[in-house]
Amino acid sequence: MSIWLPIRLERGLLPKQVLYFLRFKAFQGAENLKGFFYWRFFGSRKGRALPVCGRCALMKKRERTIWHDDDSFWQTFQFEMFNTEKLEAAPQEVDQLVELLDLQPGARVLDLCCGIGRHSLELARHKFEVTGFDRTASYLEQARTKAESENLEVDFVLGDARKFCALEEFDAVINMYTAFGYFEEPSDDKRVLLKAYASLKRGGKLLIELMSKEVLARIFQPRDWHERDGRIFLRETEVTQDWSWIKNRWILFEDGQQKEFTFGHRVYSAVELTGLLRRCGFADVEVFGNLEGAPYDHEAQRLVTVAVK
Image (tube, rainbow, N blue to C red; front, side):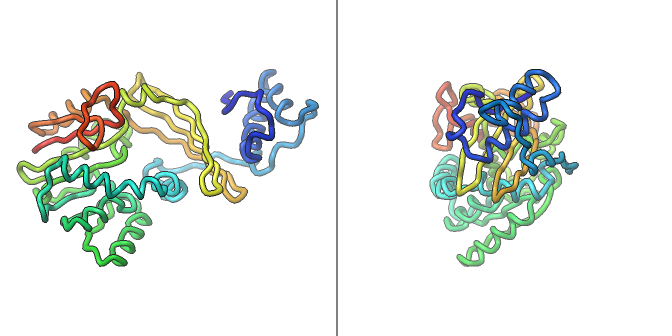
């Protein structure tokens, strides 16, 4: 049985929704003695078992499509993935990647897996010719609306990154915020890189920015939770398949409702990602610890690779 927090917590220190969740987890495990104890403990201080929260007890596991093709996943967690801090960081991140890639005025840039377009729009403000590509229609619609409101010219394209190719059209391709490694088959990751390679002009550069094995191992937390804008977000992370795959379980409490998603993605080390890039044809690959170009060492914040065609 999985329990989120130590059981000797004062009940008043936890939001009511979290206690509901703990009761539900205890109820799930009540078939064994340990589970029964948790159920009794979280049921009442006197040990009398109280009814489990109805909305939790009736929660059913939903049969879903593959998580990255599930629009409801992206819509549910947009508030977390594109919160105010991340939106405000976009101008600085674009300044950094422009310098790291040595982008020249008017360069053509593909923002691969652009989401709601936070980097695409900022690149357009810098007068680059930008194409934003993503698989989530609602994200692209938000990006288009924002671009129109600012009179920015950005071409937003809907599709599958494994299939998109604009032959030798771009001076640079960027893939930001761990938007790589979603597919269960490693060959699909390679397909994405091969399409990016084909889309670059000779001498063009591919920048990938993500969370790596090395950084994750240093900061790893199997469970955490926080509250943002009246929402309670719980997250459980598990390392599987010999440190090649990360399994995630995200739970959101909002407006009296609970939503839960499980998903996974591949996690790369610097050596593994640079090797894959070279096998896809990239002649020169540099590795950095952040977008400022810091060394990729024990203090690295992210894994940033710059690969030249």
